[in-house]
Length: 355
Image (cartoon, rainbow, N blue to C red):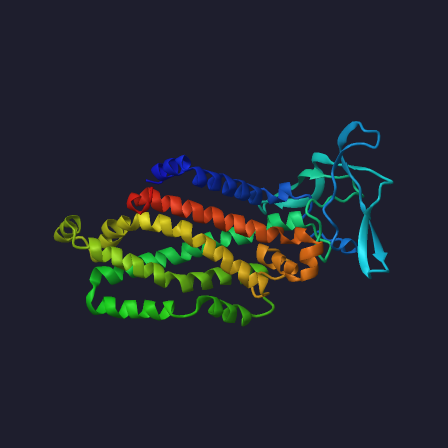
């Protein structure tokens, strides 16, 4: 089924573009250590809010040259009381590709110094400028995206098994069991999820590492979202539990658990696939929202949410628009997942497609 769905998606113009964009994003995040010119811990506090580096391919004589850049010199504008930067054209710094740079561990395992591009030892290159602490925004976007773009799938790994089994049991047995289980699910659904996330995230111990906080956020998101999914699964189970193949399995002595897992829940596959593609964006936005409010991933670790927090000041929006890049990427990622989700729904349920 998955192969057929992918083939149909590839025929959809918008879904095809969305798949390609997400493929590029996840490829970049997987090889972030190699693609980023600096490691995630790099910081130069003397270069706060440096504009994006300018890349030159034509020298001062008008001839084509190897790509090079200039460092920025920090000045203070006494009249307007602000810090300014200007290019130091006294020395060129050539950009080197597939060159040795700061050491890192590829995928956390393999030591390496190979980077896609670097500059000379005393040169600096910031494709998307720097933040208030002099950290390269481009590098931090790559490292922060690993958290923002994976949290949804990790939450689904916890949420979907709970929702499938809970909804399957409720719909299969029916009666009082169904009534009690659905009242519990409805009670969970009635809780304002985002406000609960804020409360739970705010009471987490301050000494927790970002990894521990990340895993707890995943669990919290999953424990909030399973109820609505279970309710839909329960309705689908009610519609198929009296089918002939289910009665045949019951007649030959199959256990209730086997009937639920082997004969009933597989009938919900199409809904599960659609739900996955449509649920991931909500978890990306939830993590970004928490981090934006300072309750998610904490500095100095990066996520697109806490990086975007710095751009909430009007001065930064006007004078330092490169700080808005994480917000643009969140928008692109959520849009792509929604386009794919709509296309998958049309493929698996042709009646829903309006031609």
